Amino acid sequence: MLDVEVIADPAAAVSALDPIRTRLLAELTEPASAAALASRMGMARQKVNYHLRALEDHHLVTGAGERQWGGLTERLLVATAASYVVSPGALGPVATDPARSGDRLSASYLIALSARAVREVGELWRMARTTNKRLATLSIDTSIRFRSPADRAAFTKELSDAVTSLAARYHDESDAGSRSYRLVVAAYPKPKEDA
Image 1 (cartoon, rainbow, N blue to C red):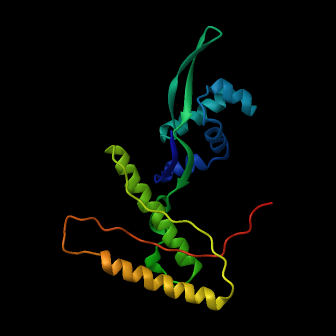
Image 2: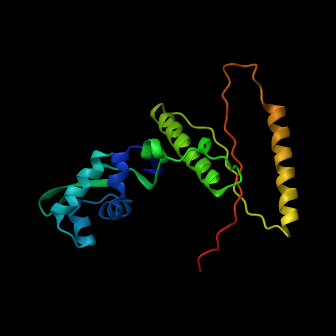
Image 3: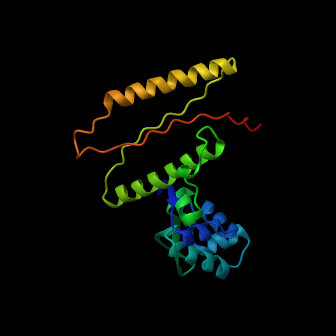
């Protein structure tokens, strides 16, 4: 089971977003049969089977073996991932695109950048898994509290200068076989923690 799967297919996204199917995916972090799920969820087994077939058709659940119970053989299913993210690519031409934003300091531009990262990394990770390779990534996540807006502006300038200097030092166009990497640095007010 993957930690997270990026859903790029629009039909799979629709299937996963159905409230009953979302509940089934949450229940299927461990293998279970349709009968066990029906009992847990207080639903008819036939209805659970219907939804499980739809999830299986979109590769969101997979077979996890069989078990004997009361003289019957039950098929066990498990979710293909512990959690899911819907790729903005599933929205086709209405998906957000940073190229359509004129204000690089706006929240809409940051959302478009984040959405592009989900779409691109999701596609790259899916291709890496099909070839049984690792995908080299780098993530930095931290929190910073500024004393004043002036400090925030000074930090922004210093960070921009440092990133520009590092990129200029390590960027090399001479090797046509080398791989380009996208670097996105984002900052936004940290949401208040839930109580």
